[in-house]
Length: 356
Image (cartoon, rainbow, N blue to C red):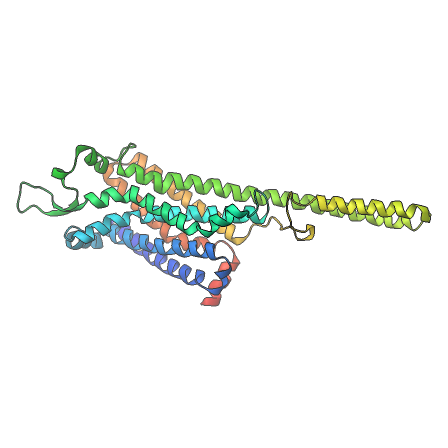
């Protein structure tokens, strides 16, 4: 079983490292400069996924795990702190995906004029959106990894023995029982495991699902509206050709009435456009599912799979197996992130071939 997991870690590390590096190269190209926010969040996602891949591959492989824990993490104070702080990489990756979906939802809904226009308040939000994202991420990282980073340091396992081995853990003599329960318990309660599970899996998955449903609803509503407008235009053209044929046969005294009917029909076509929109009737955007939206939906499915697997592991395994299987799921999710883009459409594959 250990060898199977070791080989799985090697395969996922190779696939994930190659894929995320290629993703960084592709989204750094000139093609994506027109979508600056989308490209920035994509680059951030790939960079954080690289950190996740390196961290969890080294910890899951039996040889590298023993070497790291015995020679670096349990010995050096800074390495112990960095190791505990790096556990928030999965949380950062999850919330970057949430920001990604929210940004796409705002873009799609405003572009299709379904929910709102880009008023002054939304321009202010766009101006400081990166500041808001960074503040939210820092706040979440402080909640998840702040206490464990502050309390954990290289301490002897047994304080009564001088030759006791050193481990990266909290000092029981300087830690209250409430904090000990917070760090050691893994049941669904107020503890480190539950808070990390909520902020890295449950809450991001719910938000990603809701905003993706909103994107799909916006596109479906626009598609239905455009289809009705096209049917109306088709029927109008048929009736207009009929009216044109009859006006040549009617007396000149009725020509004015025929012109009035044509102007009324044209006015009805203008009124058939989107509500409160400034887009001309001939330029109303079609409700087409772009490849960027397909990327997010496929990415959300991968995200939901990770959430489901982690939830199953959380509620069905013991404490020792919990962290182990959760790390495997996180490694698989971060490694397969790039290949979601390859499934999204030919635009991404074409750009990848052009760079290659």
